[in-house]
Image (cartoon, rainbow, N blue to C red):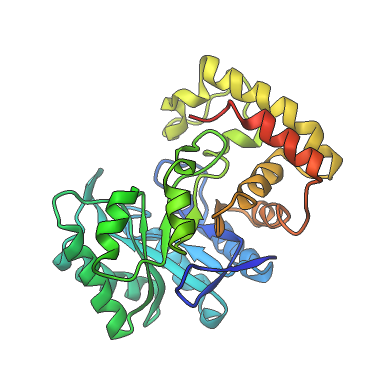
Amino acid sequence: MEYRPLGESGLTVSVIGMGCWPMAGVGWTGIDDEASLAALEAAMDGGITLIDTAYMYGRNGESERLVGRAIAGRRDQIVLATKCGLYWDGTTLLRDSSRKRILEQVEESLRRLNTDYIDLYQVHAPDEDTPFEETAATLAELKAQGKIRAIGVSNYDVAQMKTFAGQAPLHSDQPPYNPLIRDIEAEILPHCRDNNIGVISYWPLYKGLLTGKYGRGHRFPEGDSRNEDPRFQGEELAGTLDTLDRLKPIGDAYGKSLAQLIIHWIARQPGITSVLCGATRPAHVEQNIEAVGWQLSGEHQRQVDEILADLGD
């Protein structure tokens, strides 16, 4: 495993992070708690130190509760990240990054995670109904109290990050990033590089699409959100699969799968600190770990960049 500093937080994180959204069981099918716990164990055993969850991962905190069980006895080995500012009202997801809501959520997250501090506490999404200054000041207060060690945001644009950083240290940003979604390359990545803000990217394989294992006409079980995603249908799907067919021989040359090649490519982009990879099975975690620790040749890197150039937004 490779490790990098997380901005100016003083924390060091693994280049591959463990994303714990899939194990929450919302929008996914076939989730098993014991398998998810085994996946978390495999992550820690394999050198993954960054474990990322959130208050709203699961209708009732299922993901945080599982993480809390998995890290018992190993708390000092990991960088524990969770998020605040989103919550479920029945089946409706609401945003609230007010001081009152955050102070309530952090205490609940600490209980679920069975810990007395959170390494990286992130605002899950911008809340336009609450001044960003109020949200930032609340996290700065929690940091001063020792309940959190570092402060991050997720899904913020540059202007929002600047406003937030006027009231609190900002150590990381968590945006979506993969060959299909590359808009952060224009402003967010340069801003984070220039201001030494760590970038923890999510959705590296876009819900499994970039693994290449879902062919034309594939249908997921009822209740799986991917059935409604246009990227898994029609011409969009066909174009992506054609691109993956061109990439496969390059991965084969290194004994790597398409998924490993894609994750490797993301991890090598300037400004990326860590790549969150969701997994609910130990075998998937072990495969994700093998996405780093090796290097493409200059020529193969050029070929991958060229193939992926026209794929994104």
